[in-house]
Length: 244
Image (cartoon, rainbow, N blue to C red; front, side, top):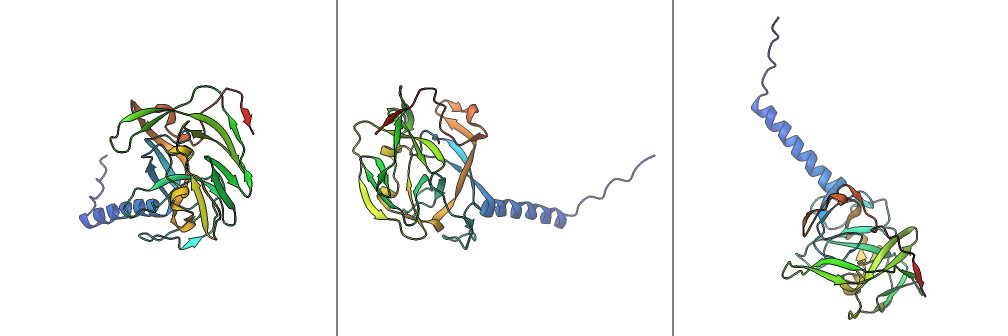
């Protein structure tokens, strides 16, 4: 027994369905989540150059498309969050940094070390060799940079920071973070353009909070171990040595 063939969709209906898919994709990208590829090594080691992060655009609020500030905000960044922000330099690429201070905090940086509300944030040395695979922004050439690795904790978030011996470190502050602003730093403390240079950032200019790595591509091709990878420091088996 033969069955009648389903009627072919009309061109207007096909167009409407395609337009609906485009609209849904645009709405998700504008309001819910967006991929972001890391272009520099300022967030090493937790975030590598070539990582494609997925950021939640609903973590702190909702922004209307084509605007530069949140229209509705229901969340507040926390110390330790990794965020993507609009570049303070017009025309520059978006930046990924870590929130280290909140509105009302008194913050300073001395010798690359964070001083929060009058107390230097404790760093614990991670013994053993430390090298970062970084990339020269002008030539695009990959370079291996020697470093010292430390563990740092802000509130409930523990992560690694890297220092480059012999770097010309920029001091900052102290200042009081104004309302509706946050202070941002890169985990690669001596190779990061962050709030030490452009000051506290309005929360409305944060595009969202980074949650996980969708995929990653390095100097030798895909980093398969980082596909669908949560954002966390590389594992360390060495015992931590406290640095006073």
